Image: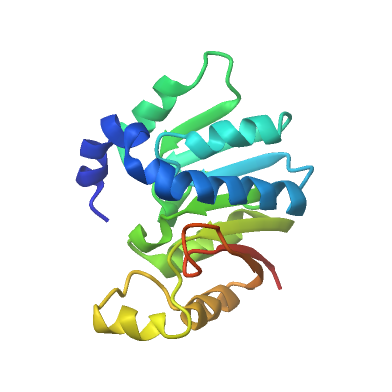
Length: 200
């Protein structure tokens, strides 16, 4: 992942057309699924939180939860902190998914939105998320996940950072996780679902 690119983008990130086209629809579904799957979530983590937009939404849906965000890009973290009100419960810090600064079993709910393909070591990142999840916790992952004919497009264009569903399921199983369900995101396409991941 090019952290420098995200540092340069941070100041314009909230105004990016991608917010309206991709992130807002995905965040809306993420929060709907989160409220349904873990309605009493006490601790929530957003991995690759960017400027904190999803966490700000989660603060409204989960008014009593502890809310944490991490991002590898320092400028994204600074933007996120600047956008938070002084009395916010949201805490954001710089960290990479392969080395998350939290104790085992810290979270009921973990989000990762369009970030998985940027993870430098996806297997290690998955293992870290598994380490942090509480026994009944959920990981909501949204990214381009190739299924059906799109698997061949992925291979033809060498889009190796974007997982195929079967590959992702193998990586998850290796750390005791599995996909419980998948929710499509209207207007974004069937290849960008919200995956509900839980312990096997």
